[in-house]
Length: 317
Image (cartoon, rainbow, N blue to C red; front, side):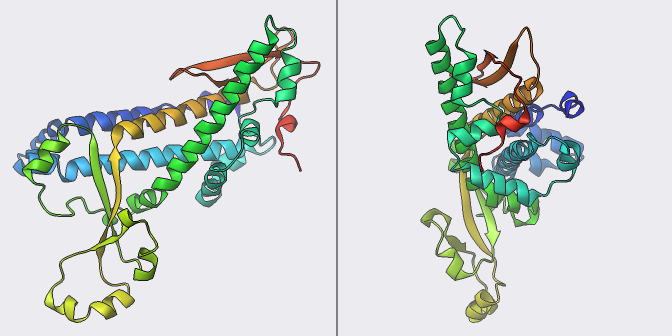
């Protein structure tokens, strides 16, 4: 476990997403680079391309990375309390098991989330802070951090649930239409220059009955049909052999970057608490909870009669 964390860097994916936002804010430079690399493929440097397919592709990639960042967190939380088979589990877990963790966390209470992050329960915290200079203030600070931690995790799980379907589509890149309505208009280009927002679409052949159960914003849009398709539209739909567009998300990369930052903080907290577990420094044991500031981490020292172990953080029967 210590070897894993020594070689691990939880920040790189957030930094990558940060870089994608930078690319999206100035896609022209990337288009010019691509044009030069391709011996003057002029079309890749034109605004109709850089603020069209390229901007949508960069946005799609950032969404995918942010969803994968969430999966990183879910996987770590699933195996963080593994005592004997940490290496075996971390190297061989299935995506399905990890996704189930994320779904369960959307409704998890603060107590369960605290156990996952190896944050001692309130009674243990009260005992461990009894000798603090201002015990009630110290306890209140920890409990505020506990509540903050719970909210951060639940919101992250909800975020993943929102983008999970698109994440799966992204992994099969042929399902992403990056010019869903042809060349973007000049008005659309001018608007995309003012922020880092982009709409994302996906192709679907989903049955009509399944599509109508989706929210209004995610309803299908029929592509223009030729004479042969129009004559056989019912059979094509029944056979799921008619390609249609579905609006997936209207994405603001500022929000994607901030969500990934929160995931990074959660990964750092999980790492810090796992490495601190079992360590005693002059009779004190350490754990951390998130503070109120953007990057704040509150490190807490408690004095207990015995050293906490992984067994103290098992879920109650």
